[in-house]
Length: 450
Image (tube, rainbow, N blue to C red; front, top):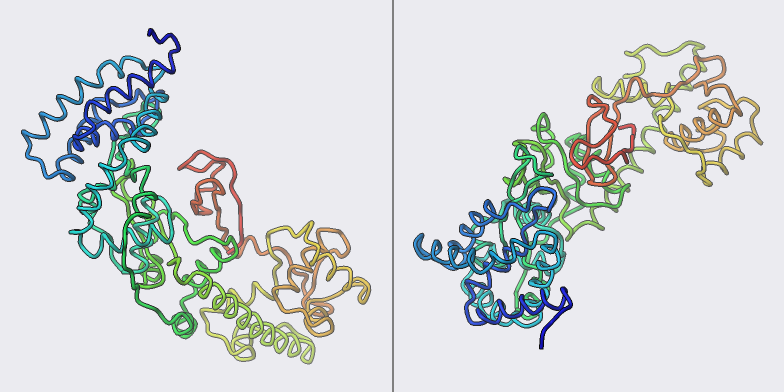
């Protein structure tokens, strides 16, 4: 019976091809990798270049000699030559190959991978356990492994296990943006369900870790963790250029990991930084407590300073601020910004701040920072938000520290701004001042005072 429906014809063609090699895991693996090729139609598919990547993967996974893998690639090219000609239908053909392997040829892959994993190194087993308990993409898995174990998994070992394929990728036909893209096999979830994997990751002392951050004044690490906590995320991508000191402070076995992927079109461009998913809730709770404690301490110090200025009818000098507040010289600029500046971000629409601002206006005609801290018992963080909200709503012209003092303005000039891409989770820098994310091109950028 002749098949006239093009989609049914393509499906039949795929089924016949895969059935021909139903007992040949090497050829089935090669066909699967051809279907997983991430290069798009607009970039020309990159068929020729991808065969080189498939060859390397097959050689490692199936322990083939150069002559053996060259023979496989020659046969693969011959079998797929007709499919390659159907350019407008490539996406549909790829989907059908993956779906048909998952449906009818999955057992041969499972048997092969199970055999590989039974002899795999401990790090590969741990890598799979991370995926089993926290299924994310490859870069994030490597970052998680780094966070939990303080190292990265040798990529060739993951390829040898049959679960990773490093394939060719090119951006919009621009050869300058060509790279390699690690692709986990599409039915990894189903394979892991059928495997018995033991996992006993070491437990860490989160409270002790956070206490050490406080005692050693690791402000950059705390700031990093606060940013993730506020966004309720554990992954972020950072430009590694110029962040050597930050990365050195962040990297801590059991807590924070960093993965510098070799699969990037631009060298030294981005790193994936993450918090271990095993401790996320406990760590964020501890950081929240630390922030609250610091906020309370700063509030008390600022009240002491303002009371000194009220009593002496003069603004304290830098030396006096250090003595009265009991702070270090390195904390002076931040402390002065808290007393003399308002946040850069807007709090319009924030019901909680609106309620507090209303309470303030009901009690004071022209409130000062000192009034908010002492009479209304706001902490310094809340007081600054309320002050900014009142200025925004034109309830007051400005927020003075004490009656008769210099009004507070926004602190955008004295404090740096973090620019964050909401699409690809990349943190940019205020020096770049971009309109679009240089990584993904999105214009969904958020600014936040650091």
